Image 1 (cartoon, rainbow, N blue to C red):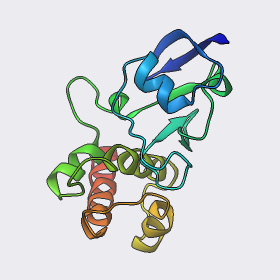
Image 2 (cartoon, rainbow, N blue to C red):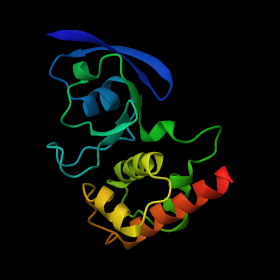
Image 3 (spheres, one colour):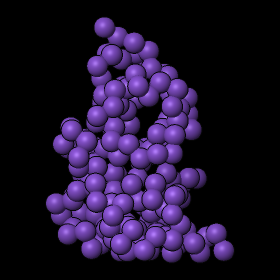
Length: 159
């Protein structure tokens, strides 16, 4: 059985017919062609599929697309503006916060959610917030540094 899902993704109203049991990550990837969001664990514990729904962090692999009806969703594709990377994206590049790239979109989206809520987090707060995003490559030090540097860059932009 199919249903029509309508939502706003990265500022654009989108609509697609999809099976009622389709997860949001699959809806984004296969129905809307937004492949930046990755799926790794399929049970909501690794953070690779992290997106923002109405500004709040969510694991898109454990949410049905129909449950996101009329929501405002931001994916990794929606962070850059006018060909300019978001400060979190730029910091991950500048400070080596990624390697293989599987967890990177989710890490970046989680970091953005943190910095939207807390513009000047301590290292302990960053560690606590990012705890739900797993990485098998970097050992986390470069990820933490990237988030710290992104916070600094965003503070400088506000000044």
